[in-house]
Image (cartoon, rainbow, N blue to C red; front, side, top):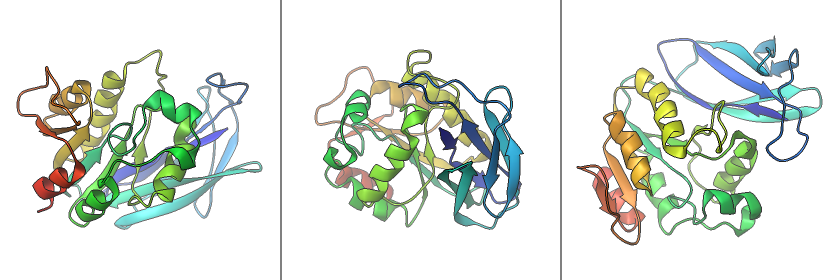
Length: 244
C-alpha cells in the first residue's frame, strides 16, 4: 500500500512530499516497509526509512495546485500539492458530518457512491474557494486516503489538499488531538487561517487552540462549545458569513 500525503506549502520555500509504503495484511494492520523505492514522476526517487516513509524534495514550486503521480513498483497514486503565498487566506473544513452526511465509522463500510454530501456544502465551497485556499482536514485513517479523495471528486467538491491522520491511528490518538497536531503544521506556515469548520465541540477546541475562528455545523445547537464559536444549521449560512 502506498500513501502520498497531500500538502499545502508556502510559495517562498522548498516543498517536501512524504510518501508512506506499507504491507497491507488486513484492515488496520499494515506494517511499514523499509527500503522501498518510490518515484515521483518527473521529479526523482527516494527510499523509505525504518518507519516506511520516504521524503522527496520537490524544490520551489510555482503557485497553484500541482497533481503529482507517485509510483512504487506496479502501484501508482496521486498527491495534491497546493502552493500559495504565505499570507494567503486559508479556509479549513472537516469532512464527516460536516460536508459528508456520514460518520467516520460509517464511511468505512459504505460504498463511495452511497455517501451523500450535506445540502449546499459543494456550492458553498465552490464560492469560498474563489476567495480563499481550501484545505480538507479529517480524522479518518490514512488508509482511506484514496477513497476519501475519490468521494470528493465524484461529488464535485473543489480539489484541494486533504489532511488525514499522520503517524497516528484512531485507537491511539483522539480525533481532537490529531487535529490539533495537523493544524499546528498549517499554522506554522500560514498565519492567515481565516476559519475552521467542523461538527463537534472538539473540532472547535482544536481550531481555538491555534487562534482559528471556529464554525460548527449542526441541525441543533451544541452545548459546551468554546466562546466565540459560530453555530450554523446549513452551509448557505457559512457561505454568507465568509464569502458574502
